[in-house]
Length: 353
Image (cartoon, rainbow, N blue to C red; front, side, top):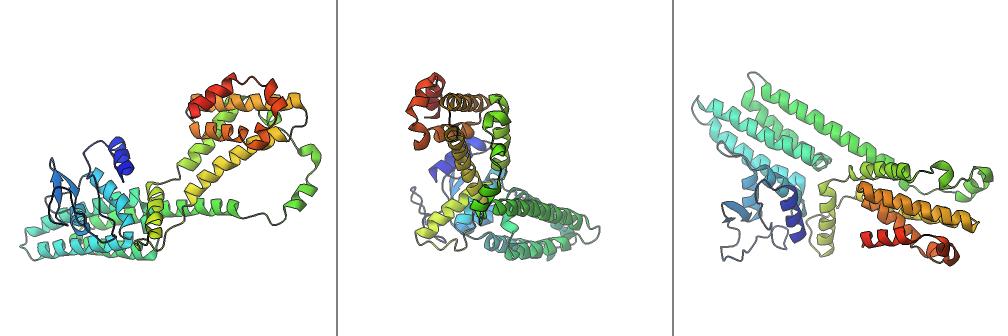
């Protein structure tokens, strides 16, 4: 949790965030060090730093005179999934919204303006939620809760239908985001499927088509740039909630029942697999060359590629290339390494460490 808090302070410095969420229990309450009663909200310098789950949820829901800070919204929605399912959180948010709506509806005629203003704030909260964590709405339960809240809020402005139009656009954007992410996962899943008969493929492939990396791309900078494009494509599909799934999975292993349906982190797996594939590619390209002189050229080429990756700022590809050259099939090629100018490689290893 300390690492998470530190990262949050560095990436979102607008306002201080609460330093801890909850204790070890899924529905448990925090016992602050300051001696307050368990579950009571604890403030430091005017900022909420801890409280029970119910208190934190109430702090999330807007009122007529209050709207939560964006940093708090992001932090709570991200970390709350360790303790409560998104659809359960949506249900609690919807219940609080309904209570406030009923209170405003029982007022005088002048309360209609306040009712519409309240609806606008709720829509803004849902809009930030759907844009930042669209995958929370993948399952039917979450979509059902979202539709129920939207239906209640739409009733606050039935005259001109402005609220309904905003909700309709928000729902459309959410469905598009989910479709794009599902499509990406389907593509990644195809790559995960094993080849049934690799031997037949290798036998039918003509020997002449086997080319080394230098015949495809002889410029280290160009290859480094292409590797960076691949890195960015994979990183762009990793979302904050993907990382929190790891925390949820660890909790479930410790007999915490907060997340019994831990979602598979395809995007993290894809990024991890890419690192391994690049390392194996480097080792394969080096080891498949028969002549020592040509093999030396390949090794020096990959060292230059790794250096260009470092200059670009693509440290992951640089580390993958160095890892590939440190694999035992490559490291044991003593005669080849004796011909390689290893000064650049030594500098890269220092940078990697």
